[in-house]
Image 1 (cartoon, one colour):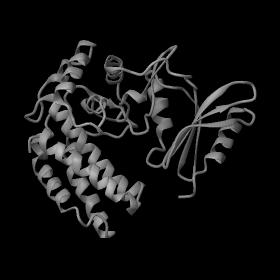
Image 2: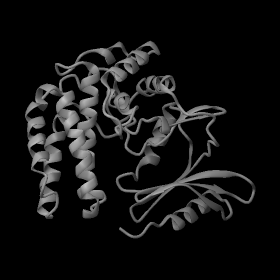
Image 3: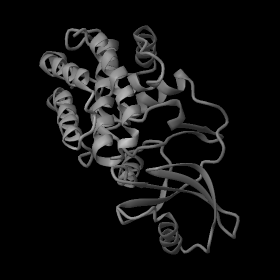
Image 4: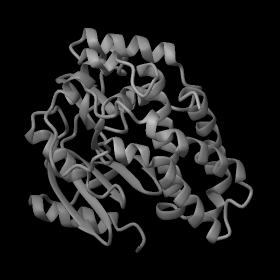
Length: 303
């Protein structure tokens, strides 16, 4: 993977859109992606977003969402270069306020009511059930690379979750099953003068919509089933399917959602550690988060 080719990507996109050179201003940049505002000589502005694998197909997800009538920023142009995606998108301008829980449920109802589309990856019951086994595979690879040597507890916990996963994955395809945003947080909901738009579709998939509802309050604080129950009830009141409140896998909807969301996050962190970030210096931080999430998984899924 070459160094970040954002300058060259932006040049390509500007050429495609027939614009003259632009002035770049960073909005948010991290190791795998960046967001900038670009200003053109004629006074127009756009958002330039770039990202490397596995975030390199967001343009397809956004175009799909737009076609299906979801309120998302419009993609003016996109290009891929050396494994990096670059997009020029509509500039939504400043947000007028932060999104609250009622904004979240309204957006989730619209998202989950949109018909699903074949290009999105699918997380059905079988794939959900396999998450702990996949996390164990990542752990095996990390250990082969002489990493995560002091993580026997992680292996033991994943084994326990794996053995219980067959029963606990029941109800995965109960409604709402369809579009899952997967980065569904208040920061992914832009509320501007002209209404709201959903951002950050880099990891959208087809799966249990409860995973979105479980992710809304974030994973920094301990999981709060009572708070999620209230959120699920607000979702149903706002027009979401009443099945969102149905028990699944022998658990309450809120425990099932929070537990599986944490398990989904653990598998993703471990894949990141071995595949996408692949930097032993980050191991202590990753191990800490994985341990914390796995302890939540055992508690929430009642293993």
